[in-house]
Length: 370
Image 1 (cartoon, rainbow, N blue to C red):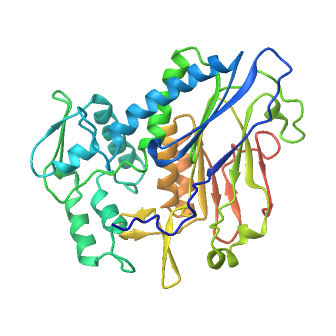
Image 2: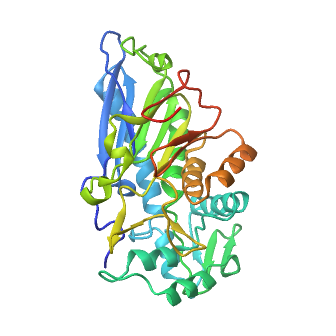
């Protein structure tokens, strides 16, 4: 089986680079932990505590919650005693599957957000994604197979029974894929639980998904720019570089150093989507992992799209939605939604952002035209 991520670097670097300066001059200290495996990414956790033991108790809460969601939302693994999304897909066209209410809730959010944002991201388009992921060596999926999968991926083929907590995919040709929403949703639910446990200053970076709980406890007086980063956590958005000689030869971002931007953040989510870490090449053409369900193929509308909003699940969903949406249509969508900020990095090296990101106040942009 050939995966769409075949021709990438082995180590998945973070799309959002967490910028932290450590301080030990106060009673509270800033600790850092890195874990791997869950949701197929690297997780970096940063938080304050009086000692390592106290910090590790917070890490334990995070790991236990994220492991729970990983097991529920995966489409690749079975787990003893758990009916997860893979179980639903395995029983497509056969029978309804009784599942945890957390699965029902996420499916309902995916349906609702799709309807509210122009139907760009379809969580029931998993068969289309699977055809791309499982393509044969040096071949593209059959157009006929893709069109048949699209015909099957319709709401009428999905039956969700909230009262019985069951999901039934009525045809074998339909599959669920939560790749555009599951990790962000899981991070949000986990952050909410951590907040209820009294955790007031913590930063989560799960691949391209960053979730901030509270502010810094200790002021960072070493900050020389974007002064809010003295009291807020600071997040750097990395440049969309492929680390592929041919692709980066004409990549305008490869000629620059540093970041697309820095953002001062508290109680917010920041999610970046781009094709530059997961792609394959055929006949010198780039095929990313973000698939347009109308065109039935990967698209490269932007180098990356970064979304800043309260809910990590919605930020995850919207970063993919906006990546699939032309800029003019996307900016209008964002204005109607409200309470969401966006950074678009274009393939020609230019950048645009929403008005709520004020340069020098809560945001700094680098290496771009004014």
